[in-house]
Amino acid sequence: MKTFAEKVRAVVQAIPRGSVLTYAEVARAAGNPKAARAVANTMAKNFDENIPCHRVIRSDGSVGGYNRGGTPVKKQLLIDESAVL
Image (spheres, rainbow, N blue to C red):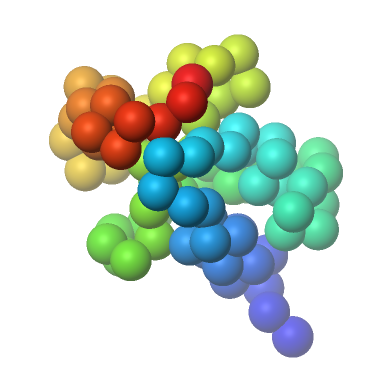
């Protein structure tokens, strides 16, 4: 059985280029709709480049934090991918 963090990473890994999901949407898809903060914590600890954590944003539409260079880097990655925010 997968842990919640493993489920989160699988959901995030499946987000296509140019798309985003909110932390709450990822939590719901991973099986725990009330665990948006746990998703954020999982993404903060993610250093696997195959898991595009920059594609996970806040429910208010702001980009949130990014552990590989901060918010400016996250914004630029999303712009480069033509992500719809």
